[in-house]
Amino acid sequence: MRRRLADFQLTPAEFDVLTALRRTGDPYRMKPNRLARALMLSSGGTTNVTHRLVARGLVVREADPEDARSTWLRLTPEGVDTAERAVVSVGEATQSDLFDGAPTDLVEKTTAALRELFAAAPRLRR
Image (cartoon, rainbow, N blue to C red; front, side, top):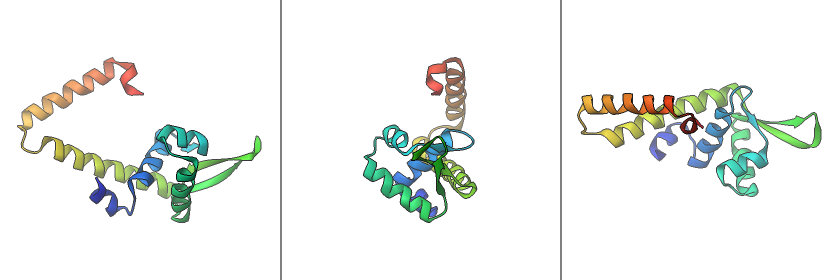
């Protein structure tokens, strides 16, 4: 995974932040304290990671119009694109690592069965 993330110049923590924001759906934003809890990061760790992502133009901080003391972290369009491309790349690498050498028909049947299971079990989709 680290090699794939290096292609995007991302650390695992930065990848986690980008994908957490991406999972929220449009407008791809979250409060820093909620993000820290979701990723089990300290507030200082969250601040360090988000500073780097802001400097790269992948995340922006936005003032909360309802609470002047609070901010939102939001993916920029470049952040959304980077997150999506990194997810695909990491997913491909993970799939390759997991199933390398397994018969193709078995992998396809297992994948189909897992898709069915996730579709039938709403609790697994969270």
